[in-house]
Image (tube, rainbow, N blue to C red; front, side, top):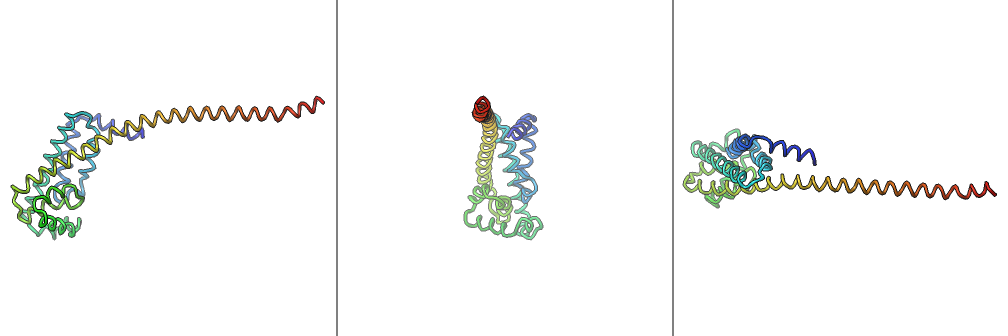
Length: 215
């Protein structure tokens, strides 16, 4: 546990602009078509969020991550707009799985712009929905508000989880250290009691022999 909190403290010691820049870049890549399978944006966000210890830091990271997520979505959208359904046959989509492209298209046909919002919280499919939305000719003026709403909600959720996890790790370590001291004290007391009982038993066993020798 101490190793975990040491790592979190080391991360928190980095310059905040550097943490934000790396987190924003990975989020942008994660939200762009297919790149999310190379750049672990969501994992990086959760880890970086452990450095969030104040409201201003939360707000700044929330803004940066939201903007980068929307930018990544928009890149995916315009790629889909340009290349259309040909993206389904691209190497990157085949690697991800064409069935996920089909799921993204089906979700868009059922939910329209709402699919862009809900897909933000769906693994794999969310990477393909922006491009699929562009390919399906969903109007950008409908796509963008849904993308913003999804990005804002998604980033707030993950930053909140990461921040809470970082605080919990430190709390657990403090409790764990306290418990360890208690257990050590109990172990010492038990050890002393066991030794005293053994000595008393040994002394009782030798008393009859001494009496026999005297007799």
